[in-house]
Length: 148
Image 1 (cartoon, rainbow, N blue to C red):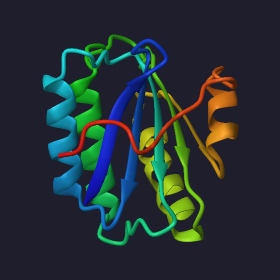
Image 2: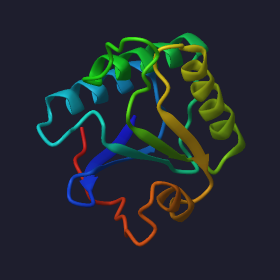
Image 3: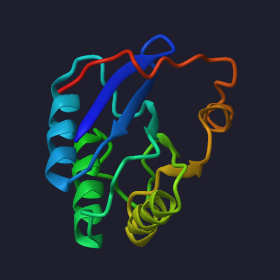
Image 4: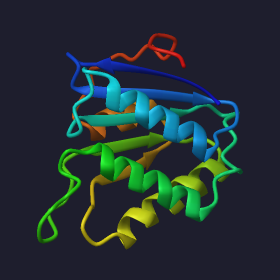
């Protein structure tokens, strides 16, 4: 998998751009890298951008649920009492039909989880996603950021 991540808008927005094939193990490594990065704040908004050639076909429903669980562990509010929702919002930019299907399947894993419900939406453009995140004027350079 190829990805870059960066922190934008005064380190209040995590931006991850993906290309090539994504496997669950790759995403677990990314989660661990973020956990070790002092700039990462679990409650920060997230913008995930998948280029048109990103292949998600290796991600099974079990793998998607495992990714969700890793994110819950990454979040400092992961151990909630009652049904308190996690505080972050994630905007997924997907342009290919299979990516849209996989993103919706991933969102469904969160909806099935009763304790943790961050706000997650899918979009077909970065500008739409940024507007939803309340950052409509922000310019994102996807070529910037940290690579594995």
